[in-house]
Length: 226
Image (cartoon, rainbow, N blue to C red; front, side, top):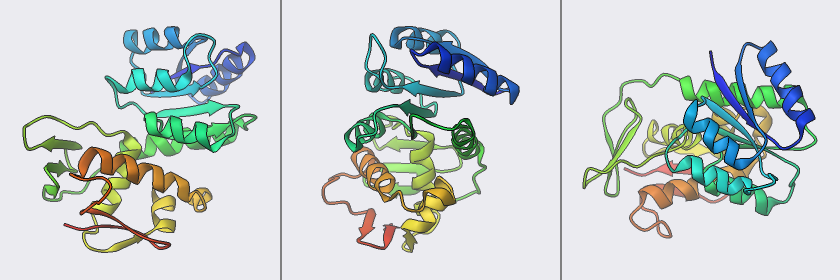
C-alpha cells in the first residue's frame, strides 16, 4: 500500500485529505508543522509527500530541501501561493509538482496517480549513457560521476531525462515531453520543462550555462546530444 505523508497547518484540509486518500486505499500520515513532517518522514518513510508551503514553523521550501538531503521521494506542493516565484523556488528545491489552493480533490488525486505511475514505470534495457563526467544507467536508475559518487535525481527529473536519453540525437517536442511526463492536461506548462532541464543541467553538465548534451531547441523542444 502506498504511504502518503500530508503536511498542512489547516486541520480541515488534513481531515479531508486523510478521509479521501484512505477511501482510495492509500496509507496516510499527517503533520501540521515542518518539524513534525521531517520527523514523521524519518520515522516512517513515505512513498509520496503532499506538502503545504505556508507552515507555521519552517517554510515549506526548507522542508523540501530537508527531505531532499536524504530522499528522492516524490513531493507534490499544495499551496495558496499562486506566484510564479514560489513555484520556481519549490521546483528548484526538488518538488515534483505544484497544486494551487483552492484545489479539487480529484485534481490532486490525478496528480498523485501521475507521479506514482512515473515512479513505477518499467525501464527497457538500454546501454549506459554518458553526460559530461557522468554515466547514466536508466535500467538501474543511477547516475555515477567518474569519481564514483552518486548523483540523486527525483522521479520527475528521471522521467524527463529518460524521455530524452531514449531518443539520442532526436528532437523531443515540448508537447510530447509534457504529455508523456505530466499528462495531456499540462501541454501548455512549458515553464515546467525550463525548470527541470535547468535542474538536470546543474546536476549533469560540466558547464550548465553552455550545455553540450541536454540541448534546447528554442520554441520546439529538447534534444539529447550523445
